[in-house]
Length: 329
Image (cartoon, rainbow, N blue to C red; front, side, top):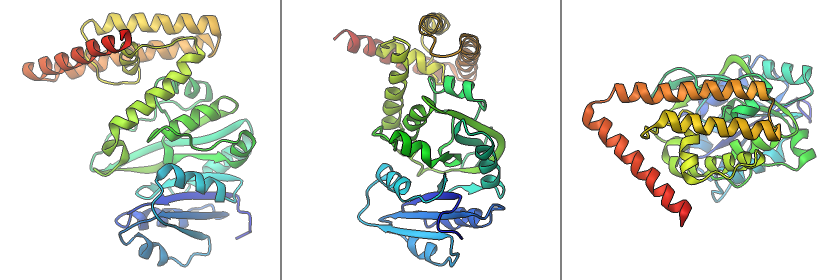
């Protein structure tokens, strides 16, 4: 391997002994070979280090970090340690398709305007189901960032020079730091998702998105607020509840259809004034999200028993009223 590989695969590990061998195997078995696998163990207290040390592949570079510093600090250390032209993110519990690195490097080589390349995914493990990756083209992804994180973090490969030139790293948005980073990259560079399923994304009870969901949601709201401000919108807590429904959040408010239609009109009017997004593309995606969001509420309510439906609607209406009190305080 050259001293400066084409790709650095960055894998942070914390108490990942159960799955990390599968993740490592999927990288060392890639059809593309000019990479380093940079593994940073963030103070694991299980057998993670013992598992990692079993590998003799010269492309693996292990950094042992102690004490535990947390995911954001560890990722940012990895960005600084990376030697590759491109940086591919890999989680300790996922499995990369054999052709993942080859396909992503080929795209970045061919399209210099693209700063970040994700891919479609296949979910497996405790829960399986359809992929939640919906958007693939640059403009559609930039718009989608206003409503959700449309890119799966461990599927990403990005240009290291993009980070260097703009002095970017994972910012302080707890458990949504990657979402905030994608938004910052999108201000000057295109983002794409490849339609091929290049990552098997494992679901299990210890995932951060499940253990820290409340904190993650607050951070994601902060990322959305930043983007709404570029449209000249300072969203109230009540408006944020409605806005989340455009990202397929289940909030069965009374008159939810009218509330969503009103918010869609406000978004479209703001973009017509500011021209942040191409008006035609923006209008199409807003309408699609209005349709899918209202359908989601209707279908889930129809599938519920009457007592559960009443309980859900009461809880959401209570939170909506409290949000109004907060905004007027």
